[in-house]
Amino acid sequence: MKKNTFDDNYYMGIAIRLAGRGLGKTSPNPVVGAVIVANGKIIGQGYHKRCGDHHAEINAINSAKKNIKGSTFYITLEPCSHYGRTPPCVDALIQENPGRVVVGSLDPNPEVNGKGIKILRSKDIKVDVGIRESECMQLNEHYFKFVKTGMPYVTVKYAQTLDGRIATKSGDSQWISSEASRRYVHRLRSINGGIMVGVGTVAVDNPQLTVRHVKGKNPFRIIVDSKLRIPIKSSVLTDANSHLTIIATTSNAPARKIEAVKKLGVEVLVVNRERTGRVSLSDLLRKLGKREIMSVLVEGGSEIITSLLKAGFVDKMIIPIAPKIVGKGLEAIGDLNINKINKAIRFSSFTTMRKGDDIIFEGTI
Image (spheres, helix red, strand yellow):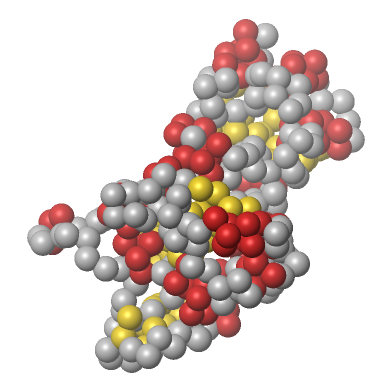
């Protein structure tokens, strides 16, 4: 391997790790890391910490201990070239006049999408694109889908036993997964804009749907409830985070119940309904996208998971599998009308990892 290639991979790896610090904090912006290198030494680095704050490039420039002119700039995502919440980063780069800019991946945002690269090159700044590209793209998988479609990235997560049950036949499910798996799930919650569950899950488990086992920001709690059946004393309606709760319902919801829920400081979002009377998941996801909720973690139950899979709205599945067997019980996914194996839902990529006693499957559809 040529020395330059080795250096590019090494320094981009540092930028990727920096970018990861912003996961769950920058929505609806992407996560970005930046490293400035001169004479084989890092002279500045930074990452995008939260929406509305300086971008990674600016934080790296502000941290620089030496003159940046002639240095190499490593950035996980193409620098912006338009005015948004902050000025264009390409202008700041041009002013500093680095000798070379190395970019992990292009930004598919129509307002950027190659324009930042073109502007830099027009100023005789050498630009190389695609270093550790797949890792840089994975960092921003939520953002990439959101800017391309206006819809949130949807991840389905559920814990199951080795024989595929999410609860016993009596409905008991606490706890299928290990404590280590549950901490991992709380980390997932912290990096998603919303957690979605059906009203049945709330009625049976009365979950808090918050981040408690890790440091992080509590996401919006989205309860799908076509007829507004949610018990009025549910934790998601009465706890300190009730302002983060959104109840997605339809015109079938009783007006009195809507007013009672609103008085608790909870938002009631009336969406279109399917012919069956259920919440239109496509309309709900579009409305969440308009609110700049860039990603949603779906945690159950079986009905909503099955509906999302049938409609083709699921982007990723994360399944902690516990080494337990319960026999007859509840399954996570219902009938998908698949009669032949060659019609089965497949994954373009997947990984497995160990958390406590569990094996966690993570796959992209």
